[in-house]
Image: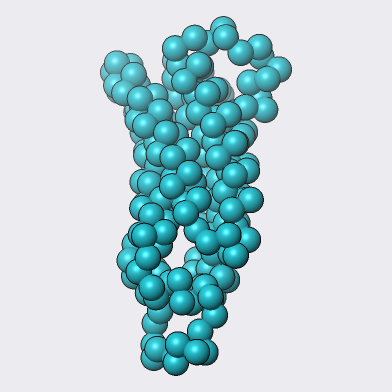
Length: 204
């Protein structure tokens, strides 16, 4: 993570640096906290993808259904890390103008975390019409976090990080579309139990 926030190339005179560049080079506590938050987010996303792809692989390969029971717990841990990550990143300077995006991401991820936990332990708690909205809150929360990354990259004058954030956004959208297609494939093959396999999809 540290290399993403280090300025490449020659170091300009301090008087020529923007506030964001000074913050990036200062090694402050808020910078370290932001790095930690980004790490939480990345690991959480990886765990969410593992829970989705792992569940689909187990179902398609017709492995013992008991293995499917581990995927929702991997998903819950991933969703929790994705929820905590933006909270930790709230340490970014107010001048970055990115905190509002983080707040929106936290709200969306909390709603999705609530949905994921309740669907796993108390499936009848949430009325069906609300499940769809809560299911996709995770996607909106992730998009808001990626937009935060882009704004932060511009604040510290790192165009390369802004481009990387765009690539992550495109990849995230691709994964969502791919997951939806996989759902239809699973339904077409009548693989059971689908409820456990599909539970993590919304948290992407």
